[in-house]
Image 1 (cartoon, helix red, strand yellow):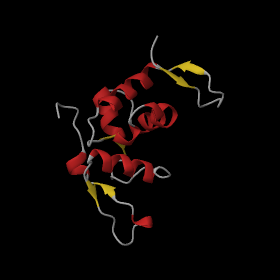
Image 2: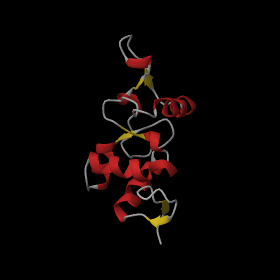
Image 3: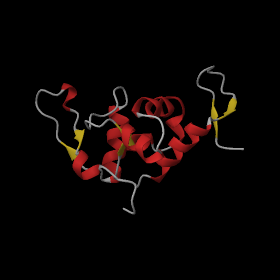
Image 4: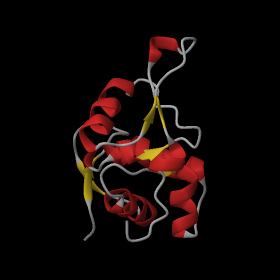
Length: 123
């Protein structure tokens, strides 16, 4: 039996076995080192299956039990609605950030993708 998660579709808190693809996506998310990130597309490419939207869907449904803040948008913008929680994790882990421009809503920084992006290698 694989990883088990709360069924967010029913909201009942019943344990469900995750689909095999979801297991694989979550396994990749757990491998990303602290202070580094992979984009949704990077995860799909690393798996050789699916695409950014499929990875995003898995993370939205089942990602709460893994370091979800390490799987990100390719433009470095923090996940809408979760910016402050993610930012706290990034600062704690030392993830490279770019300060927000004056015109950025809420002055929330972005990820410095060239520095933070992880290629799935040894570090």
